[in-house]
Image 1 (tube, chains in turn red, brown):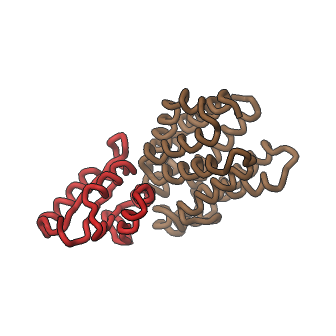
Image 2 (cartoon, one colour; image 1 turned 45 degrees about the horizontal axis):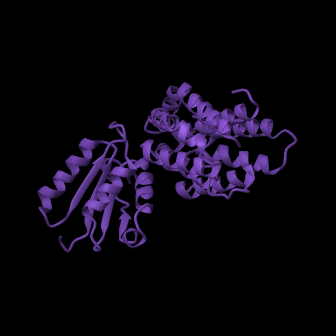
Image 3 (tube, chains in turn blue, orange; image 1 turned 135 degrees about the horizontal axis):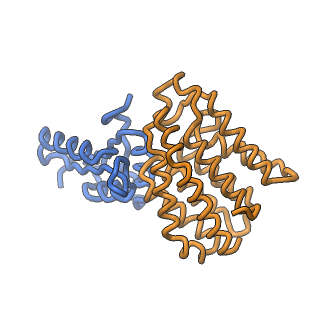
Amino acid sequence: MTGNVAIVVVSHSPEVARGTADMVREMVGEEVRVAHCGGNPAGGLGTDVAAILAAIEAVYSPKGVAVLVDLGGAETNSEMAIEMLPDDVRANVTICNAPIVEGR
Amino acid sequence: MTSAHIGRLIDAAAATIRDHAEELSALDRAIGDGDHGINMSRGFEAIVDQRAALAELPLDAALQKAGMTLVMKVGGASGPLYGSLLMAMGKAGEDASAVDRLSEGVDAVRKRGKSAPGEKTMLDVLVPLLDALRAGPADPIAAARQAADAGLEATRAMQATKGRASFLGERSVGHLDPGARSSALLVHAVCDVLEGRS
């Protein structure tokens, strides 16, 4: 447990998600808890609501979780996952308006 | 709405998505990320896998369960969008009319997509459909089909302001919206079942 906001990386690509999380760990070590998920429920390119939910729960602390997403479907699926969290947890989780792979 | 109806609706919806999966992905490749057909197919095949269990449920519960299946299985934005549509239709209340159910569903899609008609999305089929049915047409099936077709065709001239298609700006003009196309396909599939054609 650290005193920092945790990060969840959500990409359509499992490799992009893992690689991005690796880069964050390389830069900040264990100071920031990072989880990642990528790929649709069948393992292809896409995102998976259940996997996003699990990633958020894996790094959650009351300090909060920042979710970074790539293409639009990752955002919609992340919104859906966040809505499934209990009220007190949901209040501390937000999707960041910042690009991964694509964005503006 | 009987259990046989629910089963036929599932079969008809899944069949039209399956039959048009390549067309939906091709439309999506032109202005989106190219996965609409395969994503919708995965979601509707997952509903087919639950066909027996869904057909045993009251309509409300069946709609909610099918909606949640789309949310969890589709893997793209269309999962939460179509999932929210079905789940909200299933929460309209046991006594809700078909039009009231659709109205609840369309509101949920608006909120989920933070979108409105005219932005080149599935709402450009669903909102005209709802408006046409609210007007109390003499032949609701024909009115529904016509509204869906006209709504779909109208997306061709629209410039997208939502989703990845919005990145293309004016270049999104001239293409049908893939979400509007899948919505129109599903409207026709439901009409086919109501008319006893499938």
